[in-house]
Length: 216
Image (cartoon, rainbow, N blue to C red; front, side, top):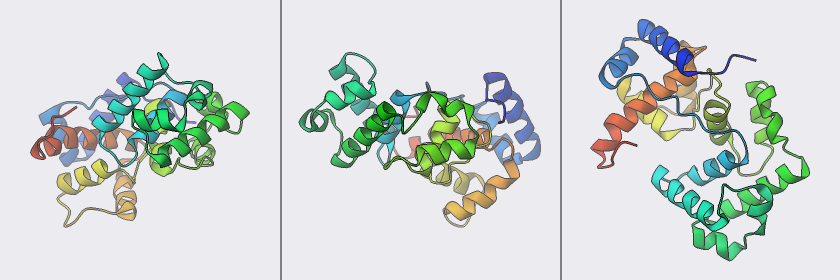
C-alpha cells in the first residue's frame, strides 16, 4: 500500500508535478498549492458523500447539517436507522438517498462492510468493498479513498469538476469523458490525487466564480 498524503507530501508532489507540467504550474502560481481536503474516516463521511452525489456542495452541506442537528451529533448507523422516512425527507434526503443510506447503515451494523478496516486495504480492495453497497459507485469510492484515506494516486474520472477543469486547463476541444480522463491522468502517476486537487482548485477559484458562485 502506498504512503498516505500529508501536507508535506502534498507540497512535494505539487512541486514535482509543476516541474513536469507547465499547465499545472500556471494554476499553482496563480492560486497556490491546493488544499489537502481531508475528511474523517468512517460512516459520517460516507453518508456525506452519498448526499453529495449529483447535487451542489452547498445543498449536500445543508442537508448534512440538518441531519446532525436532528440527531444532536454526527450520525452513527444505529441512530440513522432510527429516523423515519418522513423525518429523513424533511431533512432533505431524496427517496433514493434514504435507501442508499439505510443499506449502508445496515451493512456497517451487520459487518458486511468492515468500515474501520478499510484503511488496511489496497486502493483496489477498498473500492471493491465499498462498491458492494448499492448506492456507492466509483465516484463515491474514489473520493473516500482520496479524502478519508488520503491515498496519493486516485483519479476520480466520474467527477464533473475534474472533467471541466481538465478541459479548460489542457485546452481540449471538448469535455473529456471517463476514458479520456483515464488516458490524461496517466502522465501524473503516482500523484494523480494531487493533480486532481490542483484541477479542483482551479475549478473552485476560476470556473465557479464565472458561474456566479462563490469559491468554497
